[in-house]
Amino acid sequence: MVGKIFFQELFEQLSKERVRYVVVGGVAMVLYGAVRFTADLDLLVDLEKKNVRKFIHCLNKLGYKPKVPVKIEEFALEKARKKWIEEKGMKVFSFFHPEIRNRLLDVFTYLPINYEEVDKEKSMISAGEVTIPVISISHLKKLKNISGRLQDLADIEALEKLERMNG
Image 1: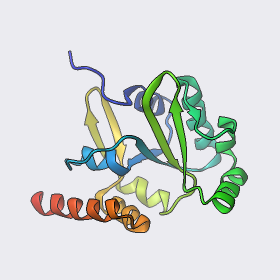
Image 2 (image 1 turned 90 degrees about the horizontal axis):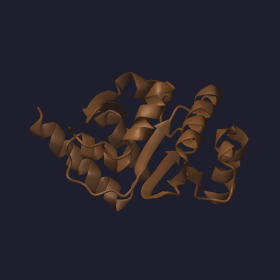
Image 3 (image 1 turned 120 degrees about the vertical axis):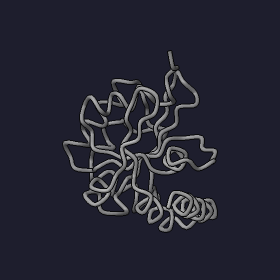
């Protein structure tokens, strides 16, 4: 029997509750075949009110907590997210699991690219016993370009190399 993959319970719960999201960041890179270390899971969640509530319900059910001292339900409030962005420059909201130290989850507080387009072009990648919605390579490159950090620019090069190798 194959062991569980990292974050499997989260992926299963999000699927069960039909939460609209895609995996982005380093885990998306790895799922596409890039050799890349990452310490957290980055998600782009559809920020439509009902969807965000379902997302928060899943996190509560699994025991995730915000890293900042606010109630987890505040993430579902558009007004709170907007305030965090304006006052603190918070582009991602971080969650952790108090019983499992290496379960760090970063979720965008805003949509840097159109979610509907992302959803149409996402890939569904099987890993272990779960199927994971992953942002398309073209949208992942757009996100990485928006960020513009050195690691993100290196990731774009790695993704382009993967695209060339895969034709």
